[in-house]
Amino acid sequence: MVVLVTGGAGYIGSHTVVELLNAGHEVLIVDDLSNAKAEVVDRIETITGKRPRFCQADCADKTAMEQIFAANQVDAVIHFAALKAVGESVKKPLSYYRNNLDSAMTMLEVMEEFGCKKFVFSSSATVYGPNNPYPYKEEMKAIESSSPYGWTKVMIERILTDYCTAHPDFCAILLRYFNPIGAHESGLLGDDPNGIPNNLMPYIGRVAAGKLEKLTIFGGDYDTPDGTCQRDYLHVVDLAVGHLKALEFAAGFTGVEAINLGTGSGISVLELVTAFEKANSMKLPYVIGPRRDGDLPAFWADASKAKELLGWEATHTVEDMCRSAWNFAKKSS
Ligand code: NAD
Ligand code: WQD
Image (tube, rainbow, N blue to C red; front, side, top):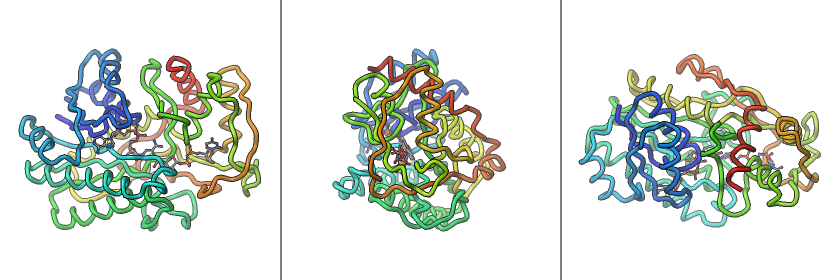
């Protein structure tokens, strides 16, 4: 299958491209490198022995996308490309709505023009909003979020649902990721955000590498077993494999299907810190600070639908996640 992977040079995209190439698919990456480096393509080649085609372009650029589709027989699109920083989206809502909505709609328009009918979308647990009980199940209402970033996911899910109603032969799989962490075992691919990380694991990696002084745990007084927030952390390689399974499922499916990708259980910030220390035989300096605005105390996935429909479940342990994250962070520091 020829798979166009938008945002394929990014964190989750690059790991997914590795799995696609290893499974024998042909891959075409479209990435504008707004949050990735071109050398990721070399690293993917080093890992897999195969070089994916790469086009540096904005996938909201319709002419550029039409040229790509005209030159390649694309069978399916996995759409990772998006801006993803929750806090930044509150400060720059227009950039987020413009980039995330335009890129998704442009891909759909061009796919329609060229008769491509399989679309796998990077959605997020954020679409469950602040009011659903956990574990989150796909049949719950997923119609609100707490940031402009999150609203782009809610809106694109809606657009895809309406599009599938209008085009019954189209297939859209909405993959709702929980908290991906960890890195490829080679240490060549991982999560390496620009500037000071917002997300927990890249922040821990910088503290472990001595680039940041200490971790501040946001809130120690939540109504959870140890007072810190609980999340469903899953290994990015498991998440990447989930995309492969979604493509296989999409081959025989039409319509829209939302599927959680998580482990099905939550651990706390303190538990993750302790697991990181143990897995990597080190001590992490941390303090408990005030709560961060907008954080929910706890949530995790009901992961049974992914198992039932895709035959997918997470296989990596928290220790695997912590070891691989450090293996990447120390090499990239
Ligand atoms: P990332 O920033 O590492 O990857 C996104 C990639 O898309 C980057 O390489 C960036 O350069 C590219 N990009 C952005 N806008 C583009 C555009 N208009 N045209 C072409 N390329 C563009 O992020 P990631 O963590 O790999 O996330 C991938 C997807 O998964 C995103 O849609 C994100 O919202 C979603 N997601 C991520 C998480 C997470 O915790 N990382 C959780 C849930 C959902
Ligand atoms: C995890 C936990 C923090 C940093 C975000 C998005 C979500 C999804 C995944 C895209 C929380 C705590 C963090 C730090 C800390 N992305 N923390 N100190 O907030 O669960 O989810 O990324 O769709 O939409 O909101 O992930 O990694 O930021 O935080 O204590 O320096 O770690 O309070 O409990 P989050 P995170």
